[in-house]
Image (tube, rainbow, N blue to C red):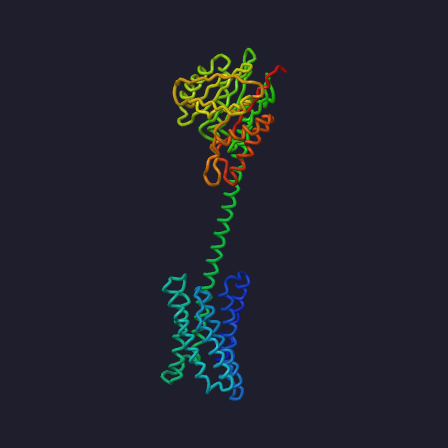
Length: 474
């Protein structure tokens, strides 16, 4: 009978040990499988030599018992390591004291397996107490399936109690079973294996869920990237349309040297510049600033271009401004307006009007100073009509004029300080007095703005029209 029990329990423990070692090989994050497999291999040796000692003659029995005593302490150590890792319990410092104690008492029991076995039992009881503590803690924290291992452990204690009653002579063996604890360990092995299998399945399910979520995120990311590409393409197309609305840059025309420049803050800017050659060789210059950015501002630029092409040749400046303001207001674009400055050039005479654009600066070569022309006016679209003003002035040879939107004067640096109009006038004076080309004057303004901005982001479009009266017929 005993030999059959020996074969059964040894083979069972060894087989389960191979199983859990294989599971550890599949997923090395689960060290609980590793420690449980080592525990099972040690238990297989433990149970084999225990039965072997009971079946052998006295001299051989003592030899097998010594091997049994050698293995027993380490069996308990790996059982505790399995429980620590199975329930994510921090290994306490006293565990290592227990390890040392088990190793020393086990070593002592090898020399006198019967006499010194009592010393081994003390740390073994401490190991059982620690196992109970871990299980109670796991159940209290409601760890997944903690009750499964707890049930197996309770059955081990029940069968061990059976051995105790039988050793004390209170009961005799039942069905010839002289060792009850192997049956208790059988229950513990099965329950622990079920727990680890379920834990492994949960982990795999979690991995599958994470992989599915990762795939979904990847798909979503690709969709977002495609959407971003689509929007970027649309913005680029809108920018190309907007740029096509702006006139080709002229360098000289009708005794003047010109420079037009626009640096948008976004792909589609809200600034606008234009020019028209009118009857009687007059030139009409326009510079504007919509009260928004992006597609809405681009739409306002398109509206302004259409109005300019349709009406400017047939209207005076003030009449044209009121016509535009009324038309835009009737479109009910809510808070979308257009600031605009117009300058009509007739030889050396300028007629200037403004609807909310910053002052116009004139460098007077003869006086070597900057003259500022500030005209108040409501942005187009705010009112049906407004008494827009006009200012007339004349230019002498070498005089330089600068028209601009508020992008540069209202440019912030990293300390939230404004660039300001005074710096614009200083730069204009410095470079115009040297009779530098108007495109270089604009380039110096942009360079100063970039230096002022530093790491801060450009917060508004910057547009310039700079021209110089040459004072002679070409």
